[in-house]
Image 1 (cartoon, rainbow, N blue to C red):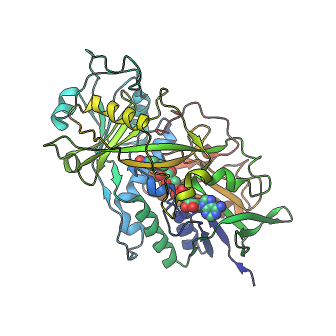
Image 2 (cartoon, rainbow, N blue to C red; image 1 turned 45 degrees about the horizontal axis):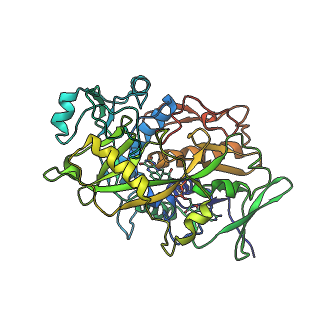
Image 3 (tube, helix red, strand yellow; image 1 turned 180 degrees about the horizontal axis):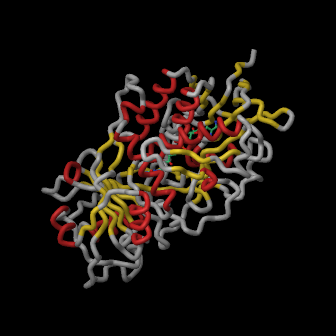
Length: 445
Ligand SMILES: Cc1cc2nc3c(=O)[nH]c(=O)nc-3n(C[C@H](O)[C@H](O)[C@H](O)COP(=O)(O)OP(=O)(O)OC[C@H]3O[C@@H](n4cnc5c(N)ncnc54)[C@H](O)[C@@H]3O)c2cc1C
């Protein structure tokens, strides 16, 4: 007998698990399948899990601000479920956006005002007082160490920053997905692991179910692609879905470095998340009093598009996909050392490598598809961890509305945020949209 569900979710990452959770709370019988051994083991496990509100679009800012409220209310969100692995922790460090030519901070500030995000303007003296290890010279444009001008001295200063007291990071992103899985199970959801989907079956032009690599079939009239960096491959398993997307997705390799904090500076307890377009990097505290340093994708950094099957070949056995490249490690650490000259850059590169599921405009696709019953929450472009609980709720309501007859392409679903009460036109995330040129085309969304 083929097991039958109301909805099948492909992918148990931090985006897939909340969709399963919210659909289950609405009474849907859900099955979530993942080819890896546990929840959150895909690209979610490599996430920096930074929670900050600055995005290039007002909708982006509004969603991130809503997301922040869920992390603050984590135990309530999970309905006080127990997880044998413990609960992920949200660390509210605050978040500093450096005013620089590398960031459209004036636009962000305008969006903060429109959305009601709390912030303070910090001048350079305030930044120095709050972050004594910071050097505030301006280094624009962003360069790489191989550039002969990289080590040129600067006599100009940056112009301060915008500080949001509400912002920080989650200490264990894989664990947060696991927590949501346990919460979903408590509402009746089923999860199956080591289960790779190789086909999305259809009947009479509608979704019928999935087939796994070992031949097992599960039936459901709803299938949701939450395959992360494999999203384009999963779309290609379903008739007409890939072709029906005006915005496409592909996998981008991204490296994140760890450097010990300067001696005498307790970055872990006293530091902030920082986004610094002047040196093309972001940083947040990491356990062990480390700076975790990522690239903000400045023009000088090469974009390394990869086949996710090649990259993840070792995952599960934890293979060789976590090897940092010397050039990128140097580029990010040396750039950050311009902002924090006493940074301790180790001899041996240490860090994390993982894949962004990048859309053409670095804004996600949260949508139905051209195949009735098939939905997508993809293209998270290195910047949607923080929004995961919001996305879960929004996708569940979108799916429910479409299944009840809404033509979302013609009459886009309007979603109301739980905490801020703001209304969101979900058509903003449509697969049919033209490229949104208001985007930063970077991790900043
Ligand atoms: C290095 C890095 C840093 C980041 N930093 C931040 C940050 O600071 N803040 C922020 O907001 N966001 C950040 N992000 C982005 C964020 O982490 C992602 O948007 C989010 O984790 C994506 O979750 P997901 O569930 O879509 O994907 P994943 O976690 O990759 O889950 C997809 C799952 O689908 C499964 N799957 C795929 N194909 C199949 C198949 N055929 N059959 C069965 N299962 C399948 C995979 O095994 C995987 O487990 C970062 C991302 C990376 C890579």
